Image 1 (cartoon, one colour):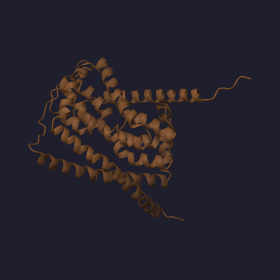
Image 2 (tube, one colour; image 1 turned 135 degrees about the vertical axis):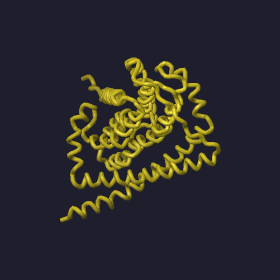
Image 3 (cartoon, helix red, strand yellow; image 1 turned 30 degrees about the vertical axis):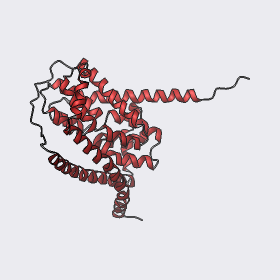
Length: 317
């Protein structure tokens, strides 16, 4: 009979190969994308794109200069748009609208690649997040109070005088990010194996199962939903990829979960980043939850109607 210590050691050993494979896959995507976007920012390409999108943003109550915040969020983590916000003189109401857009549509290239790896269409996930971010912003612009707080105080953003300085800064950031990814993914995989070994996953699944029904998801999604809400798509992907590859969750359930977490994920860390600069938490949490639930139930309805349509009709006698 295996002792508790032996079961723990076995959980760690089994986690290392899977974690290593996932870490390499993530770094092959994240590092080149971050380098390309860094150069696009340096050369002014992102600012150029933002200039031509400014008229669209006036529809959702945002000034033209705020476009660059959203464009930055599409390619990078939330730290980038928050850094840009710190250089602009925006009202809290405007920052709240931007926050909901960025929370839904940040780091799109990397996160849609992750969702493709778990069985969903990258194109559908990309346009889903893009469209729902504008829907959420439009609704918020209609219902938000005229004054949510005082004007945000602009701070100085770092500017690089040469490509050498830019690359040096990127290498430092990339090194720190790589280390963070390795530690978090390895830790997650070990934790997942331990939870499975000691049947704790069953307890977590039972606890969140009632919520999953409301969300339109299977009870099998509860642990993965919890991981996506606490650690986000990038770091939580290690667990989700393994669950899908080992058939712990069906392709149908994984796809439905992706529709939910595409809109509503990293409820803890990402929300707190904007709370730190004065954005009210409730206006960031409720719209994402509501939109995610509506989208999943709509997708379920579409799948159901397609299934009915494909059923062969009985031939007349």
